[in-house]
Length: 88
Image (cartoon, rainbow, N blue to C red; front, side, top):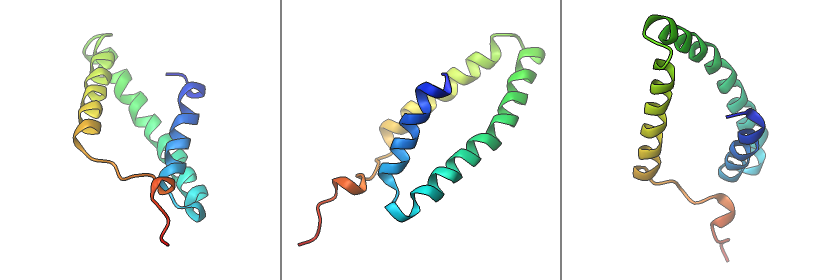
């Protein structure tokens, strides 16, 4: 997906699950981790494309997406901070 379609959603999700004083740190850490992960991901995709076949990186990506979908269904997520009722 193109970054303009997904960046806002991921940043909003992170903002919902991180306490207000740590939001900037969490968003910076997320952006750094994403940037660092792009290099090996591109190298792996190139290796699969040249070493196996042009369809291989797409099959690998589809497999990981399916695994992520299963994990989202199996692993419970905590409620966002805003959904937790305030103490009286």
